[in-house]
Image (cartoon, rainbow over all chains, first blue to last red; front, side, top):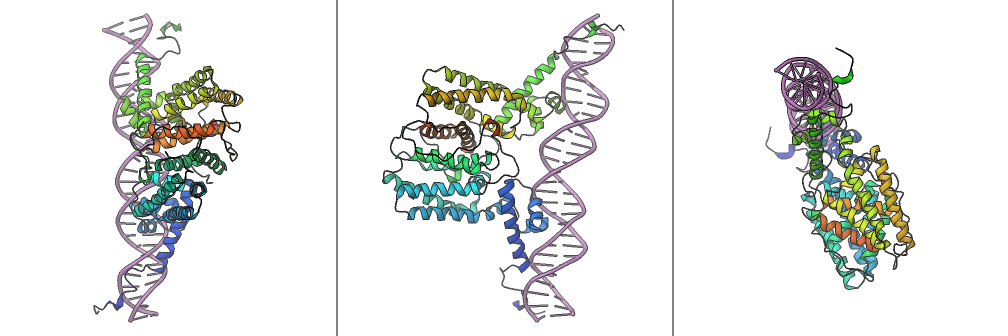
Amino acid sequence: MSTRSSRLPAAPGRPRSDAARNRARLLQAAGEAFATAGFDVPMAAIARRAGVGMATLYRHFPTREQLVTEVFADRFQACAAVADEAFADEDPWRGFCTLVTKVSAMQAADRGFTAAFLTAYPDAVDHEQARARAEDGFVRLIDRAVAAGALRPDFAVADLMLLLVANDAVIVAAPAGQAPAASRRLVAYLLQSFAAGHTRPLPPPPRLRLHHVHQPRTGGSG
Amino acid sequence: MSTRSSRLPAAPGRPRSDAARNRARLLQAAGEAFATAGFDVPMAAIARRAGVGMATLYRHFPTREQLVTEVFADRFQACAAVADEAFADEDPWRGFCTLVTKVSAMQAADRGFTAAFLTAYPDAVDHEQARARAEDGFVRLIDRAVAAGALRPDFAVADLMLLLVANDAVIVAAPAGQAPAASRRLVAYLLQSFAAGHTRPLPPPPRLRLHHVHQPRTGGSG
DNA sequence: GCTCAAACGGACAGGGCAATCCGTTTAAGC
DNA sequence: GCTTAAACGGATTGCCCTGTCCGTTTGAGC
C-alpha cells in the first residue's frame, strides 16, 4: 500500500453521512426530551427517542453537558438576536419591553430553557461568547432606556436576571397549561415596576449576572 | 402469667425515651440536611447525620414525604401565624406588606422552604388544614387591602403564589450570600406593582393556588 | 437484677441510571 | 464488488439510592 493520502475517504473533518444524520436526530430528540421532561431525562430515553443506540449518543456527545449545550446553542443566539432587534426599535422603552417580553415568552415556550439551562450548566464554556453578547445587548438596552428616562434610574442588570429566574420558576411551577398566563402576569407586574415615574426606593440589587444564575446543587442556604 | 395489663410498660401511646430522643434528632438532622442540600439528600445521609441507623429512620418516618412534612410542620404554622399577625395591623396595606415581607424572609432564611416544600410534595395531606388556614389568612388580608383602596383591585390570590414561587427561585439561584438581597429586591419590585394607584392593565392571572404550586416532575411544557 | 418487648443498627437485596466494550453493519473510495 | 475504517447497537458492568430483614441492645416495670 502506498502512503498516498488518496485512500482517505474524505476531507479529514467531514463526518460520514449516517453519522451526520444521527447527530441531527439526537439533537432533535434531546431538544424534545428536555422541553417536556426537564434536564434529568435518562440518556437512554434520549437515545431511544432518536432511534439510535447508547454508544452512538455517547460517541457524539461524551458528556451530558455537551449535549445540552449543543441543543441550546441556537436558542442562545436567538436571545442575542432579540436583543439586537429590540435595540433597533427607536423607542427605548418599547425596545426594552420587547426584549423582556420576547425572552420571557421563549422561556415559556420551552419550559424555561434559558434559566433552566443556566441553572443546570452555569459553566458551559462554549457559550461564554454568546452569553457575553446577549448580556452586552441587555446592558445597551438598559442604558439607553435609562438615559431616555423611561426605565427607572436605579435599575440594575441583576434585575433582569431576577426576572429570568423568577419567570422560569413560575413557568415550571404552573399547573398544566397555565405557564404562559403565569409568565405573562409576572412579567407585566415587573415591567410596571421597572418603568420610571412613581417609583419607590428599592433595596440594593444582588450581585447577580448571567454567569451567576445557577444553583450550586449542594450547600448554600440563605 | 396473668392477663393483667399491669405489665404494660407505660400508657399505650407513649414512646420509649430513646425512641423520642431519636425522633427529635432525626427531625433536627433532616431539617439541616434539607436546608443545606435540598430535598434530594439520600436518606442514609440524614440517618448518619442524626447518628442513627437506617432502620430507625424508616421506623419513624416510613416515607420521605412524611419526614419532610413533619420537618416543615412548624414552619407552616409560622406562616399562618404571620398572616394572623398581619391581620392584626390596623393599616391594611402595611399588614399586607408585612405578610409578604415576612413570609419571603422565611423563605430566604431556609433556602426557600415553603415553595420548595410545596414544589416537592404538593399533596402532603397532613397539612391540608394548615395550608387552608394560611390561604384563608392570605385571602382575608388581600380582600381587606383591596377594600381599603391600598391594593390594586385586579390583584388575585394567584399573584401571591407567583411571588412565593418566584422568590423561592431567586433565593435558590442566587450565588452565595446574595439570596437575601435578591429576595428583598424582587419582593420590593412586586410590592410596588401590587400597590393601588398608577397601575396599568394586566393580563389575566393564572389558575394557581397554594395546592397548585408544584411542578409535575415530568411532562407539561408551555 | 431480671425479664421482655420495644427499639436499635447495619448488612443485604432490588432497581435505575451512567458509561463502556465488543461483535456487527455500513458508507466511501478503488 | 471489494476493502477498510468509521460508525453502529445493545448487552454489560459498576455505582448509588431505596427500602427491608434479622440478630442485638436497651429502657421500663416487677
